[in-house]
Length: 185
Figure (cartoon, helix red, strand yellow):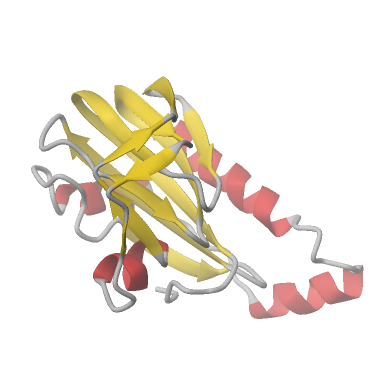
């Protein structure tokens, strides 16, 4: 878990150094209105324990915070070997996965099969990862086996899915929300 917290600290530090900060004075002004967010190992475990047998955590975002010009969500997801996952694309939100346990094959890029836009009022749009679409598969994507310790960056607009999960896979997800679609919590 120490490596997870270290990764989260690194990601927040990188996001805080965004090129939007034009001057020291502007940075000081932003820092006065923002606060640091700490997500503990206990927070992550409690979130994962909320759905130990679900296909995906029903409330994956543990925190959504104002990071100065955009929101950042931090969550945790555990996916079992079955049922099989679905393909997803998030139109506005970039995701970073840090695999903490297990392994699987992640397919990214290509074209989604049977793509259907998610309704604007759906839970996944409002609380998880913003507007997007779901599909049944991906054609022409790149398959990569990921395992504990690996990190994957999935830019907004890139279809992705786990085509195979070896037992189960658990990962921390950090979501960058430039349009502030996700409500801070």
